[in-house]
Amino acid sequence: MSNPSRLRPATRLVHGGIIRSQHGETAEALYLTSGYVYDNAEQAEGTFAGTVDHYQYSRFANPTISMLEERLCLIEGAEACRTTATGMAAVNAAMLAHLKAGDRVVASRALFGSCHWIVSTLLPKFGIRTEFVDGSDLAQWHRALAAPANLVLLETPSNPMLEIVDLEAVAALAHNAGAIVVVDNVFATPLLQQPLQMGADVVVYSCTKHIDGQGRVLGGAVLSNRKWIADTLQPFIRNTGPAISPFNAWVLLKGLETLALRVDACCRVAASIADFLADQPGVTRVWYPTRADHPQRALAMRQMTAGGTVVTFEVAGGKEAAFAVMNAFRLIAVSNNLGDSKSLATHPATTTHMRIGVEERAKLGITDGVVRVSIGLEDPDDLKDDLAQALATIAPTARARAAE
Image 1 (cartoon, rainbow, N blue to C red):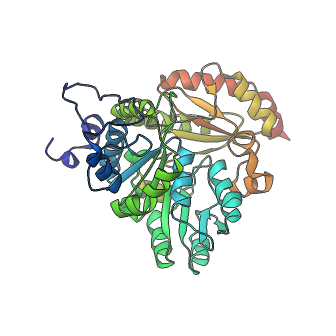
Image 2 (cartoon, rainbow, N blue to C red; image 1 turned 30 degrees about the vertical axis):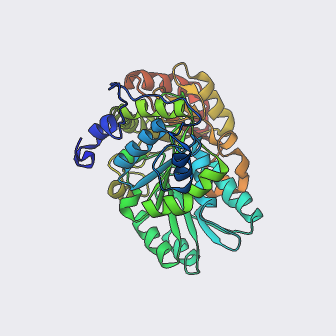
């Protein structure tokens, strides 16, 4: 390909970044090697000095990993990418590579539990000041970023309540305060939203989710401009070692080939499931970014090309009712993963967001009745049947409460 950036996204996901060996293999080659051989001592010296372009050690770079990073750049519209062993390793690397003692971080309160822990617990141990804001409230961003800051962290849509953050507005405020903007784009995927085009500086992914898409391997990615990756992120990754394995990178490459098909199918079904759930007895509320009743629907429609693969709903009766529904599923599996080809459900208050505490969950609207469902590739009618029969287990109680 002379210029793969001119190709449409689905084609880039199949053909982008391929490095073929002298054997001309069709599928991407899997380079399971920790180190590399040099032609002579001079070449080794030049490689370590950076004056010779040669693979040095798979903790730093590897041909299979390079293919994955190049393909992710092509679909994200980024200049450079570094992959990591997990999504959390990507978030941690993006933040700690950039920050130092005395710096200040402003973060959206609506973060995945482990991301919340990094901001609230880990960073202060290194003398980094942190402040949380309600991501959907621009007034809070204005107040927090009226003072100098070094980094802003947010996810949009958020996990699990699908809150939307105005990327362009927050990026402008952050840059005026001297901060870079790091966006966790896992729920949207690069196909539905491209934060770099809206002012973000760094995008992070858990490749474990949609990019793999079949629950097989772990992986993460950090994407940004070439200078920040080379000068800020690469030394951190090189010397701290959160490297992805070549095998996992190879699996993720194969996952990218079907990403467009899977995300499109799951989004269409998720939208119909959200509408279906809104009419079910016992369901008190449904969250889905493109539904008319989502409080930030207009913003979601402006930033995203579809509503995503996750639907969140609340049942009457709290934890007891939520557990009863989940335990009654026959098709939907109980799992805290998402972006899988199989539909998965989790109870955020007791799993992904358990450790942020009751008070913080209340601020985020994560009640004990909230259930998050990641929609897979099953027939939508089978999913609706499963949801209906599971919700029927609490329907008599729900009707009784409504009559009181």
